Image (tube, rainbow, N blue to C red; front, top):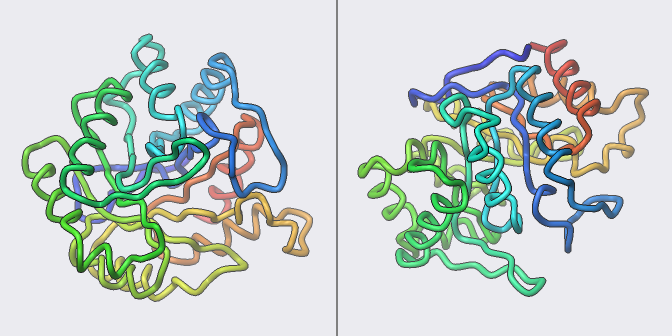
Length: 263
């Protein structure tokens, strides 16, 4: 089973591999190499059981992932899985409606987003909430109230940890003092954000890695097992957890096995 680690200086412990759920609720305008059908509830139940068997306790979702939050909430409400055993990480700032992404980082929008996420996930608290950046990290951090709003919600007890899913090195570095955890892109074909990871870790912040498998485009790597190469690359750095978004239980097991060989 994959080990768990303290998320920065929070009291949250996350598995070193987390399960991404973008494909649970949305298959439109996704940047994957092949089209896919949304999974059935039975398929998701099987995937969650596999994740549990592997020691995974981290689910990464977002309002922008279509019906992902609702589907998670439904499965947990059925009593098949215990909410306290899992870490729910969701996001604010982006929604996907009528085939387009819409961004709003205002206090009103953030508070409505949190209320909606609590309702859809059928929970009374969120473990981690990240800002879903539109690429204008610096502007979001310096010109909106999103961090201030999330901090107030954290102090109220609704959220346990806050942070941002960044798109730029500058934004990542600016966000470190304001965040409990950062989500950054890192894989064998994209290592630019290493300075953010190193600085965040030095300041005892948690680090989630997104796109570690290059959104399914790892065939660019000349290797018999590009997954292992990717895990070797990611876990060379002091990260907390790598988020993988597969719908295939056997692929999930292989991802975890590759991570365990490095750890």
